[in-house]
Amino acid sequence: MATTLAPPPRHVSPPPTARRRMRRALRRRPGKLTYLMLTAIAFFSFFPLYWSVVVASQDNSALGKIPPPVLLGGNLWFNLKRAFTMVPFEKALINSFLVAGAITVSVVLFSTLAGFAFAKLRFRGRNVLLLSIVATMMVPTTLGIIPLYMLMAKIEWTGTIYAVIVPAMVNGFGVFFMTQYLSEAVPTELLEAGRVDGCSTIRLFWHVVLPAARPAAAVLGMLTFLTAWNDFFWPLVVLTPEDPTVQVVLSTLSAGRITDYSLALTGALIAILPLLVVFVALGKQIIGGIMQGAVKG
Amino acid sequence: MTQLATEERVGPRRGLLHRLDVKGSPYLYIAPFFILFLGFGVFPLIFTAWVSLHEWSLLSEEHTWIGFGNYTKLFDDPAFWNALWNTVSIWVISTVPQLVLALVLAHILNQRLRGQTFWRMSALIPNITSVAAVAIIFSQLFGRDYGLFNWVLGLFGIDKIDWTANTWSSHVAVATMIIWRWTGYNALIYLAAMQAVPKELYDSASLDGATSFQQLRKITVPAIRPTIIFTVIISSIGGMQVLAEPLLFGGNGLTGGSDRQFQTLALYLYEVAFGRFDFGYASASSWVMFLIIVIVAAINFGIISRLRRS
Image (cartoon, rainbow over all chains, first blue to last red):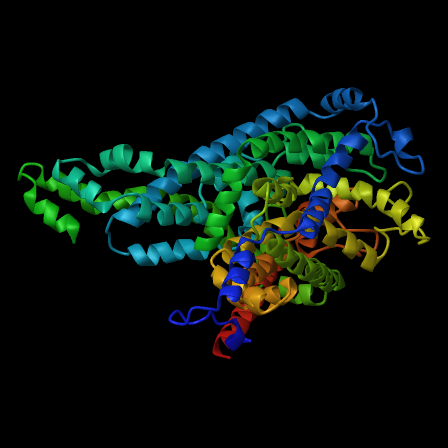
């Protein structure tokens, strides 16, 4: 294969017909089959979400029919009201916004600070410390939940959102991501010039680094918000059903031998909706962030 | 060395403060990360080891040292082995199709498409759906009597499947949730890597009449092999910690089905810790899980280095 795949040597120009064929191949747009497959993929991606709207808009007797209903019913408003009265959904939404918001601000701030230090400042132990941060990305910290729970019980944070916010205020990925970005985005000469003018490091950070970090900070912020909003295990362990996050409420709604599915899927819909809005508005940037992180990671 | 050069140019009065700023402030900037991560990430993980050597219950204040007692108990515990087997089984039947599908999807996306952003977004939308929501929606779809999947199977003359009741069917159901949520994400990772592959390779391959599938197999896969291995490692680490899907699939049963047919390791850990409040025993299983993850990662790295050599 290798020999046939090698591009034609430069000094021998290909015969005219071949060149035309090559140009056509280069210009070739994907055909109908490609779009057909993409449509199928999009169908599978969207279907469960559409389905949750369908179920959330039915009453349970309609769900017991064969064949199952595949179109929207008229019960969505009723189910929404039911969801908000049967579980503390309002509180959960507020909690989730507070938790995800606080974690996002903190991760972005601390990652930018640390990223600045790792990318642009010289200090002893820099490489070892950066390496240890990369290593922390591989550590399954969920396995430490038992002592973490005991710790939270000791400082009487169990049942409060502090217990969810504080352990998530930093992560290795964020620091690594910002280090990579800042080492390219901030010109070292600019920092040196600032130094000569007598700028302290923190002023350099404030006036030079922070403005330059904005695009990467936005991407990191979005990814962090998504993760924090969707986090399930630790909030489930440390929070109570009376003062939960949205994901904890979902587990309450689906509990029991016989699940009230029109209610449970209404809950799922409410939990997805805020992220869906963010995603529709900023999807392009989020995708860019994931792909960027992939190339660098 | 740039800092040294600038220091000389600074006036003598600001010298000391300035030096302190240059030498000390970097540590100040990285301190929040290390303090928080040591406190809430590393310390709990290490303290788990200490707890695992005790008879340690949330319900009593006394913690009796029992050495490796919890560990020997764990190795004789059929529920633990069952959970380990379930975890591996679910991991295999979720990871293999997921990564193959992701590869194909990325290959399709790696063309000059109309509406590129839309197709990419539709690939990623399952991933922004929370794991709890995914588990609930699919639990409904997999319902025995009124679920859509059984109805569709019925159209093909296949009898109703009680998805939660059997080992294989419940594993397939849980794996389906994982596949749905993660395929698009992995596809985007592959797509990012594929875009670095020189386009000329594909052009000359299509000149030689290579089909799209042949191009994927002979050009793309070898070129993005490091990325493929990266995703295998990431999904192994994730696959060992699957919890929400089996927990919610059984209607919040900590046992993962009446006969523990889909109880994963993480779910077993959760049951022992927060169902029975046996923290010592749960800590022992945490550490064993940690070791399993390390071993799985080490096997992966071993395969990589062997591949590199060959």
